[in-house]
Image (tube, rainbow, N blue to C red; front, side, top):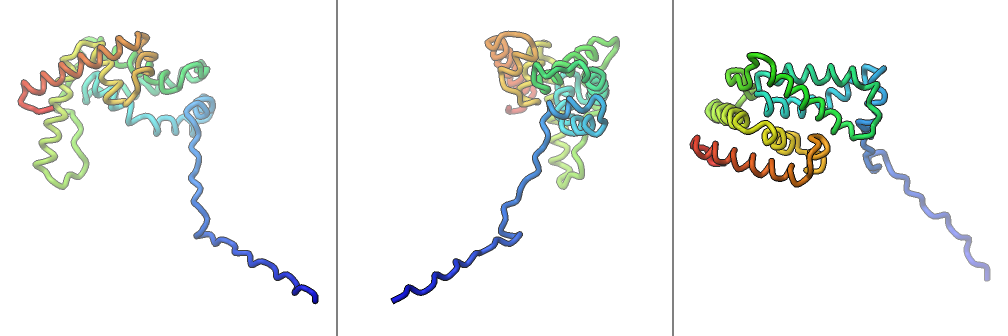
Length: 203
């Protein structure tokens, strides 16, 4: 007795809805940096990616009102220096070194205001004006507290708390030992807590 012919298996083809979404791969900083010297779109992509973080760092170092000028100086310096950037250090490390240099230059400028609190940015479209006012006051007090720190502590705390960098990268940026970085951050945090507590703010 012959076996019945084998039936062809049913092939279920996935629909477009069943296919997993493939996220667009973002180019790395290094890739963009290599293009940005001659490609304005690549340079704009780097600015878009890093401008907010650099502004936060600058605001912590020189005060909110002076941060815009520092950010502008930073990206002018980045654009000029891209041809010399070889990728031996991470782009983030190189960028933060430039930012710190720009901050130090701003702080040394004659008559440069470090914390013009009247220029602190207001939150966009607040739903609760009372809460928004409290937040603005807190930001102003934090900015003033940051300015009370010694320069090395303010630098280390800003890189850690505002830029979110790890201790190793902070050591690479500042050129000091890892233990020194940790010590500066710990002392800076303690000083900030003491300042805010004395001002009636619970950290």
